Image: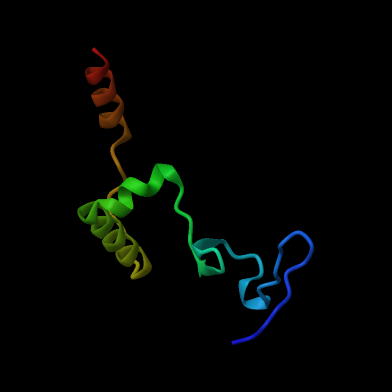
Length: 89
């Protein structure tokens, strides 16, 4: 445990291990706070982290791509355009 002095604005330097990191400050009580290193997920991606099946599919695809297991056939963009036109009706 180390002792540090808060400045006149209540700030305390956390040290280089927290430099440029996002942290959560948890107020335990009037005399105690906890600093927790955190990662932030963009709001539009939260669904993926909540959906285990979708996340597993993404992880599988990334693993296959790293292993060089890519599709031998490119996507059929003409069929996609036709499907979009059909769905727009």
